[in-house]
Length: 512
Ligand code: NG6
Ligand code: CA
Image (cartoon, rainbow, N blue to C red; front, side, top):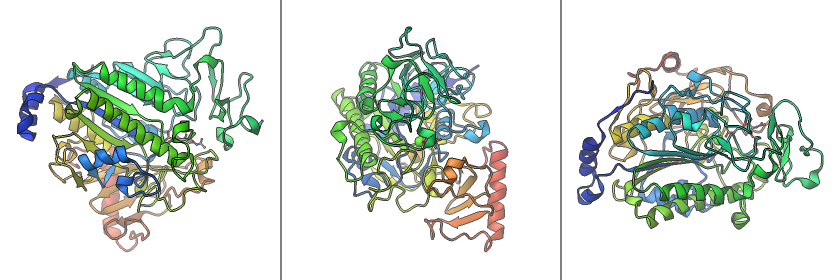
């Protein structure tokens, strides 16, 4: 049973009234909430976070008009766990959520309340548009029939999905329970173990490929790009990667435009700047960094289109935008797309170490902006914030009550920090990679290796931060995590190891 109580309107009117006395006429309505969730965008990838090799004017406008966080984190340095935490308010390691294949089952229990349920129960229309990667159905779904459970069973009224990642089959959109443009005469089959069908695969004929790929990405070739996994059939349903910005932006702006009467929650999960990076022609060449840089510009354009639509509809003042990323940056993620060779002076991780897959700071410290025009005073904020807290924080905002014994067990109310009324964040924050880390103020402890990373990662030029020894860093003095103080400061190391173990063992509401 999904239990929800809420005392929304009276609370909200009082709350909003206190935020902005001049705008009382708009406060009778709960604010719309949009999460713009970018894929693999690093701390240093936006001009508002210091990038100069790429210009991101639309996201920069959110930053200068909103709260720009300097120490906000997704929960993990890969996608599935971070998304799991964002939607459930609980850490993914409790559910052993790891990167999923495209035919994995839904990993969120439909009986558990999600952030989408929370909004829906408070009267919101809810939608997810874009990259899902949390599994669909009960495993190996039949893509030619109704596919469920999925987002509609966990609180979303509408969904339009890239089912897993753009580099994984099936390369088709799923709208609500159905593959878009499915064709009974050309049934879709998906297989992650062996080649199926007669379509070409990577490594056979370079001529047909838009870019070369590594062995894992050399499955079925679709739209000139070889993918992870094999599929046959569904030719009418194939997406065109270059059209993602148009297709997804249209879906998002249509959803917004048709929900102006009632508050809405839109989880807009962009496939940029994940591989395969195949930006639309109009963004090609807009940076000197090749497709990865151009994909950042494309992502910025998409963000601008959302803003444009909100302004056109005159609902921008009643809409909160949360902009962030699901994990840190990666250059080579399987395709030869010039990301490494054309990087020049650009620093995707900013001044931090690591990136996607890594236990170091840039694995989870990601650009994070909260924008609510005329309601919050623009500022930078250095509070320690985790995306796992969005659930409890937005519950507070809209007056929804959470029973933390079973719902959003790791989520704390950080609303004051998110709205820039305070710069007090968490005392403790967990970072998940192939090991676990804990932040406490300026201190960071990285536990010795807990999992064997996949072979392909070991062969890559990625420092995943895994060591046999504990690591301790003072991020105030050493934000680059170069000087391991664990041997020098055994007591501090031990205390943090014990505190990490305590949070990992069970949710601890006293360790905020
Ligand atoms: C990895 C893929 C990588 C990417 C990642 C998921 C290989 C060698 N690499 O397994 O390309 O798809 O999974 O990225 O297969 S994420 O952002 O969705 O977590
Ligand atoms: Ca990602």
